[in-house]
Image 1 (cartoon, rainbow, N blue to C red):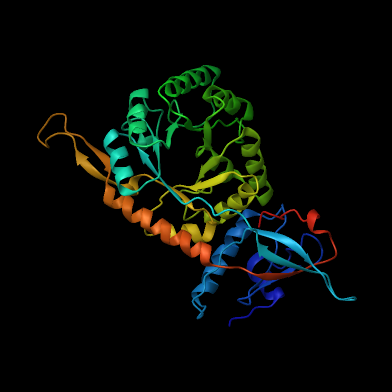
Image 2 (image 1 turned 45 degrees about the vertical axis):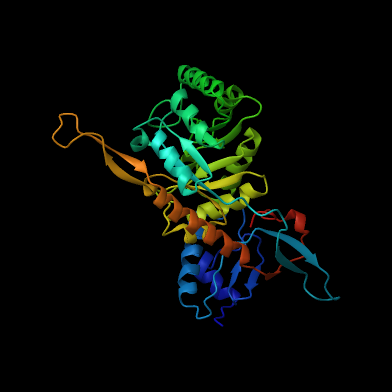
Amino acid sequence: MNSLNGSTALDAVFGVEFDPFGIERGIETTRGIAITLPSPSTELSKIRNAVNWCDEFEGNDSSGSSSRGAAAVLKTKHSMANEQPAWEVEEEPEAPAAVVLEACCDSRESVRAAIKGGALRVEVCARASLHVGGLTPSPTLVAAALEETDDVVALIRIRAGDFVYTDEELRDMAAEIRALSAVGCRGFALGCLGVDGNIDEAATSTLIRACGDNAIICFHRAADEVLRRAADLGAVDRLAAALARLGCKRVLSSGGAATARGGRATLWALQKACSRRRVAVVVAGGVTAGNAHLLVRDTGATQLHAASSLTCAVALALPSSLFFAAERVVTPDRVAALSAALAAAAAALGDSTTTARVVGDGAPVESWWWQGVF
């Protein structure tokens, strides 16, 4: 088995100067990898480097085992007198995470194909709006989607561009929400940001109130603008806390990167911060059947959101027509392939185990910031 000592791991992963408490705390896994646990001020770039380093290490590991960030609680171990206090990282007992493929659809045909292929949830956007990230769909399209499945999420976005809205735009979006609620929609993907790049909780609350008491709220990819600016783990934790205060049940995110694959280090941190607040992370951004295993393994999230990878181009007129056009429509086969890949990845995640022995000073477990997060 490959083996690295604590100082080597510190140098390789966090840098020789990373020691926020003035005491080296090493974590030695069953695979012999030793690293230190992060603090709230740990720069996200160091976490990303750690992920890349572990990827390289795993590539050289002949054991064939895989690693992942563990949702952990730190439990005190009784130690003999005069021995250094020890802590053990164990999997937190909880109900199995929901395994959900969410298909983004902008037409009746796509909704039907998504459900036929095995998607458990659909997010509905206005027709031909996916090239700008999606816009609010019509009540007619949402009503049609609800005829196919009960789990429908309507995107609430009045225009393309940023998520800083005027009072007039907020009033218009609230009116759109009420119109969608009138046809039976109870799931909404929404979100507002302030000029400072953080969540505008007052504006977002205005939209949430329009959704009604029984609504299920997903904070959409406006969260990625917040994560894109995040410099440390504390910023990720503050985002998760804001989502919990708003009453969001889910957050859609690529980890602040162009694709989820590139943002999986931040997604890992977001998943841990959100899980203890009962907010589910739905991974989005370039999700395919080919990378589903990697995304689930490295983030711990078992809900994936996909759009373009589920579609193929369909002509809407003859090529000779003056009005020739084509649109992308979801196909059942592609949905089925991604659904199967997600199920296999989630099963592998559930079968894997992570045990470790953490050596530290005598600080109470409750005072360790990352308890229940990492």
